Image (cartoon, rainbow, N blue to C red; front, side):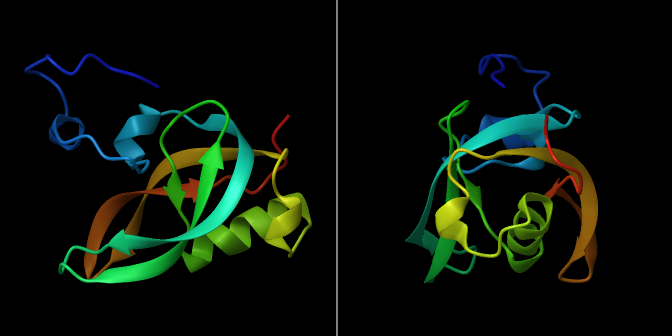
Length: 117
């Protein structure tokens, strides 16, 4: 999941690296990742405020996934486990897609609704 950072043809979202996964990081393909940790941390929001969010950390990448309600429920459903304490060690598939946010259609990441192999 790495791309050269000096490529002028690079997607604009890749020009500004983040510690968090973005849809563009998945390079248009579903990616199977192993959850190693679920934790809560303060995240800088676009309006400058900080909010407590749950975050997934993975074995295969240093980038983390900030959980929104949709993705948290997706992980719980695909793993058949409502308690996040039991998620580490499990495999999930993240896929790039589009969704509506703040009245716009935007690129986003969703949990694929079938068990990762």
